[in-house]
Image (cartoon, rainbow, N blue to C red):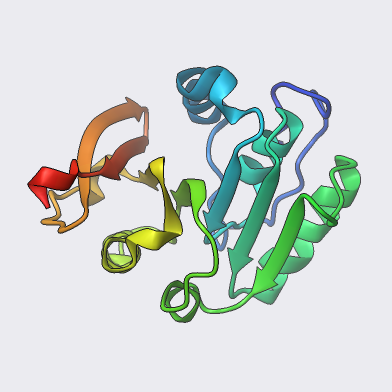
Length: 189
C-alpha cells in the first residue's frame, strides 16, 4: 500500500482501488520527484490532473505546499481522494480542493496560475499528450517559473511540439517516466 513519504503526514497509508482502474505513482518515483523538487515544495501551489488516489498532491501538502487542487472525472477517484485527505489529516479546506470535472473542460478556463501542474492520466490512450497541449494553449495556468510534470509509462513517450512550453528533463524509475516542462524564454516564443 502506498504511503506519505515525508512531512507532517509521514508514514500514513494511502488507500487505492483494486485492479488497474487507478494507477498510483510508485513510492520510488514519488520519492525521487520530491527529492528533485526539494524545498521548493514549501508554499507552492499544485494542479493535480487525473489525480487518482491523490498521492502526489497529498505528498505535496504533507511537505508544506500552500494549495493543491485535485481534479478527476471518476467518482470513485473523487471519493478515494477525499478519504485519503481525511485519513492523512490533510482535509479539504483552505489548502485543498477536490473537483469532479472533465480535465479538458477545466483546462479551457484558467482561473489561477500554479507552480506545479502534475499530469498522470490513464496509460496508453494519448491523454497525457492531449492534456499537455491544452496547458500549452493556456499557459496562464502555469506560474512564470512553474513546471509541468507528466507521469507516463516510458513506452508512451514521444516528443511533443509546443508553443509556450519546452521539455527540459526526463527521469525514469522502472515503469514510470517523469517528463518535465517549463515555459519557453520570451524571445523563443
